[in-house]
Image (tube, rainbow, N blue to C red; front, side, top):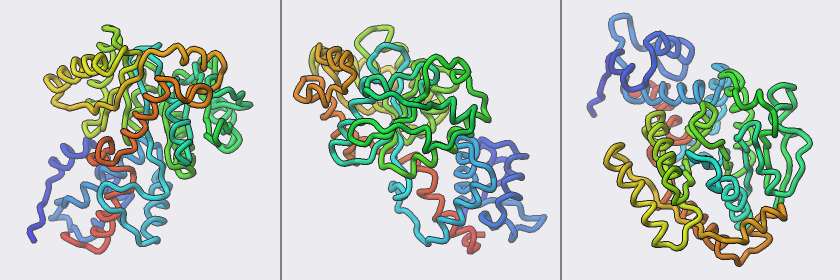
Length: 365
């Protein structure tokens, strides 16, 4: 078997790291990267080592893990002696789905709430992270009153379990808080600290739904790129469709391996939704060389407003309403492993464990 070798310059191109960062990881994670077999005259890297570097980079830069936290996690999983098959998630981690939009007022949060209910009705363990920081309203549509929110977690050091609120059907809600200006502009270290806390939540459920704010703020983009899959919600409105394209473009620039699907809200029919989807997808294919997933549509339905006024999710207040049926159909599409699962961007520890184990035994070095 021929083992391909890569120079430090090629490693920098493949990982997006600076040389100083590569050398830091080389030293900090020596026990997992098996660099000990490389002498001063042999500084090539193999594919497994590059894979491990990329995964460690994502844990530190995207999830906010410290070096010690990464080491503990790798040691813990290696100790179990289990390597997840390609495309599968470790049992201890939830499937993280971010729901976002380029424009506000397109029904994003209403979808999040009812999507969570739809999953819970299927006996799935679900949590919602309301990442619309400072303007959170998931709890309002769920009809619950959180005693604490993210400000208590970030600013006051409350433990995660004290900040979680339980909603209908046992859905766990981490509220972003209302009217807290400081939350809307988190510093990088605060965002990383928050993601470390979210990691705990991710271990306790099967599905973690991240309701981002609208637009292209740093918080929105970082929380969306943190997810396994991204759902973009739009409407037939020309401005909403243009903004949806813009956020898709930015997200793909941040994470080329993102899996992005589109939901068209407030449409008259399936044919109406197809026209909207095709218009956006044609532009995405032409200019971004990417094909969106068509996750479905939600028809215009007065029962949605009625349910929101009641502060009771549509699927619980009017389960046979046309829009409720649409949400159930979208849920089936998202749950279909052959339709909307990201096989290009693995979760934190899917493929990494095989690469770590191979480098630790010196395979190919």
